[in-house]
Every structure is written in structure tokens, then in C-alpha cells.
Length: 245
Length: 245
Image 1 (tube, chains in turn red, yellow):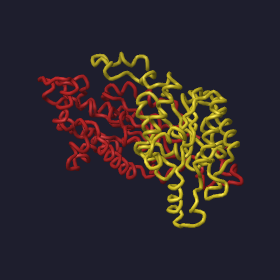
Image 2: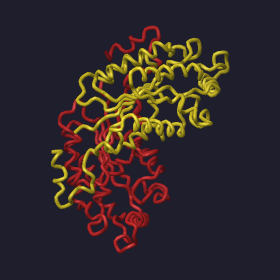
Image 3: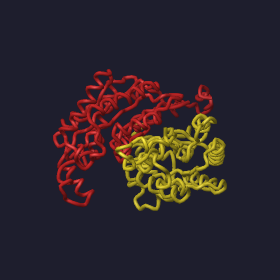
Image 4: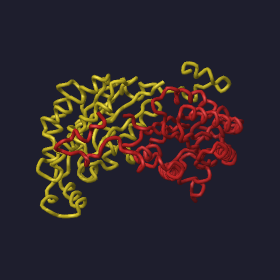
């Protein structure tokens, strides 16, 4: 018996999501005995680079394609083309088209439940502080942020619109996170990546979206992968396992 | 390309290990981009029941058998045969022989790296409190613990001896956890399951054992599953991915 998989495809916001209190760990915990949560996050990747690896991550020959795929890119594509992280920049039109082709690839491999996640908002002052620390210098390059919240909003809007066009659910993290009053300091640790509180908020938003968009994938609607120990007859334990033999 | 798997096979101490700060989540985080940590923990299961599911969890036809398997049972086998959890009791000789046959099964399916983990110590007073709360009564049955630390120690010793006989590494949690002064309150939440601090201690002990027993499986000795974003030529990104096509 194969356990269903949820595959989390994205950049560092996905790769780091098994960190303490991270949103992937919380999801795995929510789906104990029911689903394997598989992390396919790639730090620093934009959609242009992710397109090369998507066909390897979602191969043609899968006995059981992932039950759910989250597609969570944009934070790197939105790096400004003339600043510190210029090499990661992808124009917003290409971002949209890359997302679309990756989604179509995932669908063509048999996964029906796909959730698009927009990039989260960006806190520019914290990025400047982070870049000056990382590069160990205060210079022209590190005194201005390499990403801005307003440019990131264009990528979030593009992802949201694409989801609408394709009839897919979307978690608009850019908007939802900014509903929290002190999102800058409470939810982001370096202006971009999630704090423990941010991870918890992302998980709660994700779970609410999953429950609404894919009711059949709610944890209570998925079977445990073997009988509960309470249903095993201690005098004749084999009975409980006959259907798995 | 398939990512290697570490499979965690055990009872509730494994099933709950993706809980906040849990040892499975910490392990998954340690092995970002390198290993999928697969949780096969089954609450309430003893080795007698686990033997039925082991052949399904470790099937014959695997393209790539798990790189590492942790086998972590005994907490339920050690339930006393005449108390509240009698139905979970398995005599210590049978526990040893069940463990041995499951280990041989896992080995026969091609997994070379197997780590036995002994049951952790048990705090009897906390079990009594827990059982009285769970059963909502103070009675003869709930006034004495359903497991004792001294009986659990026999199961830990049996696991340790079996590991020695089979030439396998073992993490002796029963002994290691009791080296911490206030292990009862610091590490166990109900006399049996781990607190966040207990989970952290288990992870640190596990990681130290893995690093010593399986140096080739240290995170720094395993490749990332795709190039670092820093090694992608932004003017010719395809180059970095040629070997994966």
C-alpha cells in the first residue's frame, strides 16, 4: 500500500519549511498516518530555473501521482533587475508563463489538486539590514533593498490572476499576511523568510485554503494507513490485517 | 532522480515526531535537499502487531530501498500484563524475536543501514496522573501505573543486546535520557511521550549516533538533489541541468 503524497514545490520559503515550527512540519503533523509531505523546495530558485527540474520532480512514470501539489514561487523572480540579486530576476510576464507551464506539466502527470501560493509581502528595511550583514559592508549596493514590496505585489497579482484563469485555488499570502498588524517584525525574520510565528500563520492560512478548496483532502476524510491499535483484537490480531496481506 | 529516504518505523513516539519541534521534523530539516524523512509510526502498536505491517511498509519491489531505517518499539510491549494496558503487552523474549524478524525483513529488502532505538525511560507518577485524567476516574486500576520504568528497562536491555548480537548500532534512549537531571519533567509530558525539550534531546542523541555509526550518511556527505542556485549561470542556465535531463 502506498501512502498518498503532498508535494511542496517552491523556493527557500518551501525548502526551510521543516524548520522548527515550520509550515511543512505542521502539515505533516496534521496528516499523521495519512499523507507523506514531500519537500521539493529549492533555495534561491526562480521559475526560470525551476522549469528545468520540474520534469524530474514530477516524472511520467508514477504509480500514484501526488494527491496535492503546492506551487510557491515568485520571491526570487521579483528580485529587481538592477540590484544585488539581479541574477535571480525574471520579468513578471515570463514568471506567469513559467508558472503556467509548470502547472500544466504537473497536471499532465496526473495530479488534479494544485494550489498556487503567491509570494509573501516584503519588508524592505529588514532586507537592507540583512544585505549589509550578509555582505559585511554598507555600500551603494547594500543601502537600497534588492526587492521591494510593491514589485513583489505585481508577482503576487500575476499568480492570483493565473490561478483565476486556470480555475485553480490560490493562497494569496501577499495580501493575507499584511492583514496582521505587525507582520514585518512578527512574521518575517529578514524581511523575506518566516519567523516561527510567521510559519504558524502560513500553516493556518494554508490549512484553511486546503480545507475549503479540497474538502476531500481534509485529514478527517482520508483513511489512516493501517487499523487503529484499538481495532486490533488482541486474541486474534491477524484479523485486523487480512485486507493488507 | 529519486531522493534517498530515511524511514522511521515505530509506535506513537515515532508517529508524533513531526509535532512542533519533534525529532522527525528536526531530522528532515537537517537533511534539506538531500533526504526524504518518511514517518511510519503507529500509535499504540507493539512489535507483535507491527510484524503484520512491516512487509507492506518495506515491500519487495522498491527501486531504491530506504537508505536508513530506524526501528523504535518497546514502549507498548512493556505495558504490564495485568494492568490497564494489558492488551498491548508482549513478553520480552517475544519482543526480542519480533524485533529480530522485522530487522531481517528490512535487511532482506536491501536496506543496509538500520538503527535500533530502545524505549525511553518511564515516569510512573506521571503515568498514574495521565491514566486518571484519561479515564476520568480514580480507581484501583488507575492508581497504579500501567507501565514501570524497571520493566521498560528489560525491553531496553533486550533491544540493546539484540543490536550487539546482530552487529547493529543502537541508540539506548532509556539510559541516555536518564543522564539528564530532571528528565521526568523536562523530557516527558505524560511520563512516556516527549516534550519539546525531550524531542530536541532525542534528535541530538539520534544525530550523534547516526554521525558516528553511519559517517557516509552525514548530511555533509550527501549531495543536494539539484545544483545550488549559486552554480547556475544566469546567461546559460540550461548548462547546470544537462546531467539531469
